[in-house]
Image (tube, rainbow, N blue to C red; front, side, top):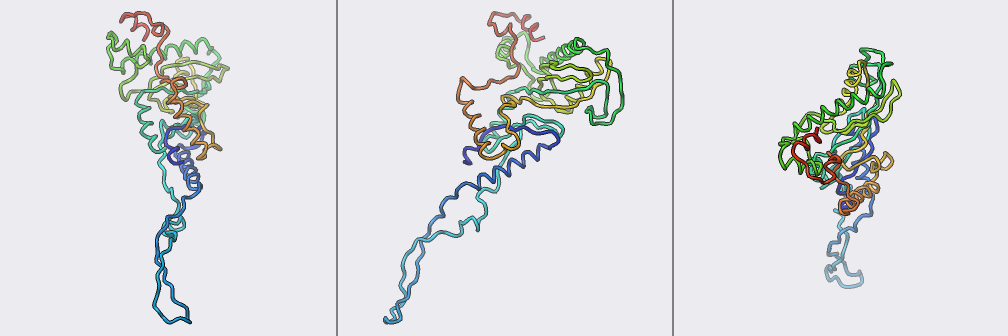
Length: 321
């Protein structure tokens, strides 16, 4: 069971709970599950037992006989639980006020976790905002510092602002990729969806879309890289400023982290050793099966690149823009 626990899985972190509490709870549940499995039989040792002759017989001294007895020094009541520590690693973290997919690793899965995030995978969030209020920490629970009107805001105006901001972020994406856009290397990377920042960079939003608009409330779907939840709340505030109003973030929910989605996430009552083993097994089966393996969702190429037609370097620049 311990060997089957090595790998990656994801859980759903509720809002208002620190990610360390989630990790510690899962560590405790995994240790309980491991130590509750049937114990291996105690090793046997050879001891020589002394026997005295009967009182009616003439004393002939002691006689020794070999016997197999359990080694009590290996008994759980002496050594304690067999598993007392297990390493659970955490991927991209969520702050206490955010919810959603949190990727975890057990054992050798920590190495796979580092390899996964070196591939520059994107993450998706659902942001809930409210027009008309500005707070000191950009959330709806912060101290209100300004109120404004929002009746002039329409979904068409919001979509135009999102398109403008997405274009700005696409230019930043090309700037941090450190690749000559007129080279064959840039073309190959764009075909395979591998254009991305080389190493650390500022947060980059690779996709923006409004999925719900009912003033003063609105909901956005965001794809991003190198982000923090605080940055996303500030981004909602900046959208309000671009629309000549104010806005506060009511919720940040991560819906995807690389290949892990909400459908893969274990909710609180599933944070048990048996459910984690099953989730890790599904992850390994998807890695081995080429038909069900989830590809890197970062930087998907556009339709012009996917068509396979020859593109000049100038056309590639226009697509990237």
